[in-house]
Amino acid sequence: MTQEKVTNILLLLKDKIPTDQIENLKNALESADDNIYESITIYSKLHNPIITLVLSLTLGAFGVDRFYIGDVGVGICKLLFGWLTFGIWPLVDIFYSFKRTKEKNLKTILSCLNNNSNNTYFNV
Image 1: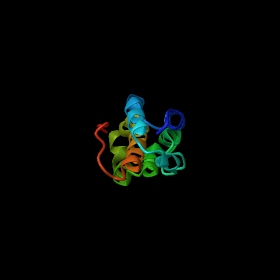
Image 2: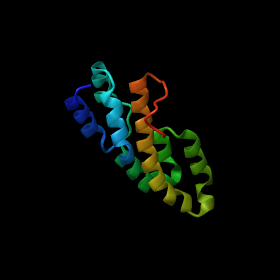
Image 3: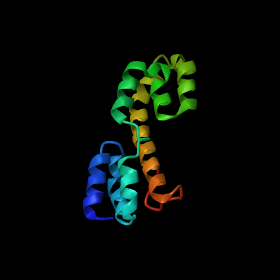
Image 4: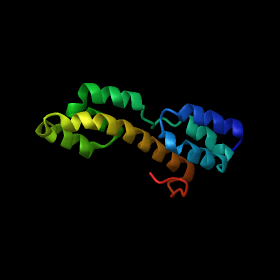
């Protein structure tokens, strides 16, 4: 892929993936075909970490943040048993769900890049 396209994708995704994985994603994009560019730029299954953070702060005690990113099992557990921890689990999960959103976005991008095959650049 051309350097301009790689730079555009990285600028588009920099807030939606873990910062420690940006260099690895750059390497993977550089070795990818040019025809994957449109698939990545218009891919709509990426979740916004800021929305996850807002949901965690407002409705996190009910597990809404976890339902949003697709962790339905954790969302149900948080809804049913979060009160048993006297609010500690929802409080700690604010930061973890933000991180988990970025990790899930990275996995989505990688599956788009590799057509659901394993990538040797990443350990997520």
